[in-house]
Image 1 (tube, rainbow, N blue to C red):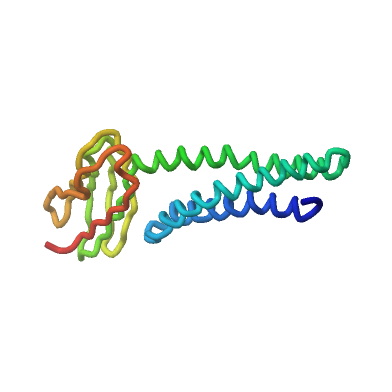
Image 2 (image 1 turned 30 degrees about the horizontal axis):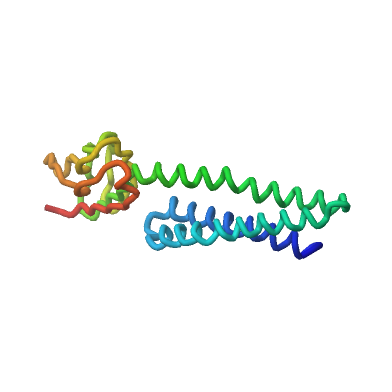
Length: 186
């Protein structure tokens, strides 16, 4: 394979999966209600790794066939560097995936007729404090877990202090989950 098709196929095989994976990752990160994106992100990783390896082999073959042509050698080198540049990005995604596994994303919805104040989320290491959630509002918080246990919430509503469980047993490398809690009138 020589010429433009070789460069285009190799470049697209490296860029499209990583761009698609990045878009899926950021949508999943910023829009917690999109539950299916996590599964699609994992599928994208499984598909993109072989595609990138095939693209890298194609560009190496193109480079070896175009030994005397300086212009072609320069283009294949650029495409090869782009494909190799995906490696640090993939390493970052793997590191971040492990970090996310130590993190629980909790959305707290206040569907009651009163404000909820002095919220303390605790139980697995990191404590999160939320001053107030007004009625009809919701807040998403991230809890980084350093030990096993349950995540609990202590709060004040209608001049009463109460404690409730947000999650069951969880811990580092067991997280990466999304939990939701709804306040209602008692």
